[in-house]
Length: 451
Image (cartoon, rainbow, N blue to C red):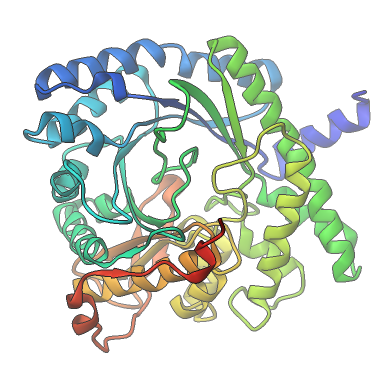
């Protein structure tokens, strides 16, 4: 039974602690849009997205108005476009431009799914799509792209890892007049989830329903405030506070997802429990870790605090929703988190420490800006390291690196909006070129043999 105290508490979370629903994402299968003629395929895609997502944005606005809960983004994820490119051939960038047209028609923030899944090798359509990614991201505004290069079951496709290094550098170069935004709209995964509602990595997996609604929650500011209110309690109590708070946040996501599903007559998929920060003051994962007792995010103890946070969020959130999925944990995107921006600027948080943190959180090296002259093979090797953490630990890891063309370590790259700003982090200049140049596939680990 809802009481006045619960209502007032929720109002305070929204007004003072930046609680919101980060995204309602409609997943749409495009498998029935495949055609041997790319122009016919593009028209089928546009028609289906425009028809299925016609009411997505108005419905989100109505739910926000009715419940008083901010819903920041309304988005769409689609079947990996490489599957359609396999059937049609032709100029794959046409698909990106079609998705852009659909995004403008429906009014969504982003469409994700300009993607390829190549963890074990390249099938028809994969290489062509990957080659087109830099151009596609440069010529569109609302399209996000991803590539899955590895999995615990398959190992790591090192040929794909090498290609991704080139994709990231080229995407940054082609958009250097726009703060290298192309690279910020691309992510490379190991163990990519098929129901992720968050960009840039969202795509609609082939095992998903024809259409589905997935919800991504937020609320780092709420968690930090709850810990601050508890004062000098022990670490066990901190874990309990995070669990209880995550339960409340997730219940709100479940409510919004259910309402959206009913209004749109589309199945409700999952709630992604991830704590997604913003550059706004008081909405930072780093500040949660500092509230636990760290002088600065990045100092000794940071990985342990993040492990506690990530685990407690999952334990609390999973009890509050009928279906949990996506990434579900704590995001650590440097440019999008005010506390991490401060820690990186102060020199407390370096890329090596961030890599260690990714072993215990929900994603990976996210929104990290590196010097523009970083060689492609170094970018590829950073991805290989991150993919290895995911493969061995049976978890999702990812890399979203932005080479800041024309800038060096210590400079700052400004994106604005939710993408924020980031100090440029230095990376090791010792070369992994011979390793990356070998190609092939890192075999799946022994723990993948579970049958």
